[in-house]
Length: 277
Image (cartoon, rainbow, N blue to C red; front, side):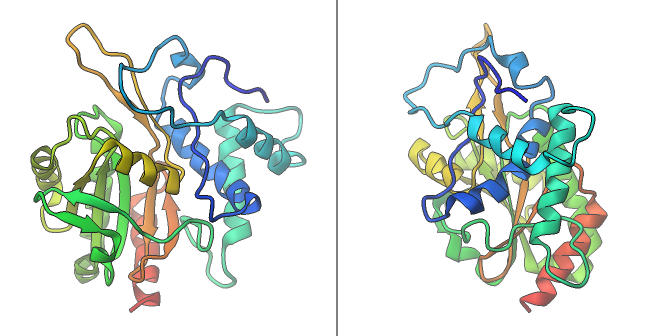
């Protein structure tokens, strides 16, 4: 398996508080979510340049992640290496088996102990400062996206609305945080209108400065990349598509990808809610 020559999408190193072994266990499922958010393939966008920005370079290359893939998948893939998407799915299954607790298996990916607690300082869609501790007591779903996203973001939000509907009374214990990776355009007002169109009761839009968003992205290994502007000055943002689940104490518990159904997410959310009730 080779690195992606010329790719503009890169991978963020985990928080320095987490050792290399922990980062390696978390890599495969996070890379899978990055692939799912990039339907044309990373190398397919290799000729595009990022939009002009004062943003500092965020991402280290994928080489260490791919070396980790080879280690995890050697012995699992017979007859040669398959496509990267197939490799990510297999690696995700390995990660799930390694992280799950005894007893009933989680339907999502269990990342307990492998990602930092919910911690940030941002601006909410009502214009007020908000921190991770503001959501203590609620089970929190965190998704990184942007309001101009043409497909992945609205599809993910719609699926989370299905989850809320399936939870019944337990939905009152859940909050959805839509964190913008496009703070230049996503003002609090724009985010308020966006999340309100889905669920003003359970969803909150969060934004911040470039530095705040970059710091939070590094903390949770989120990848995002501004794409080239079109002739009208518009642009898209390629980004990870995973949904992070934090319990009522703010501990990272689960990771949901595009392959996880609303039923699976609702099933595991009930378990998290009951565990921390």
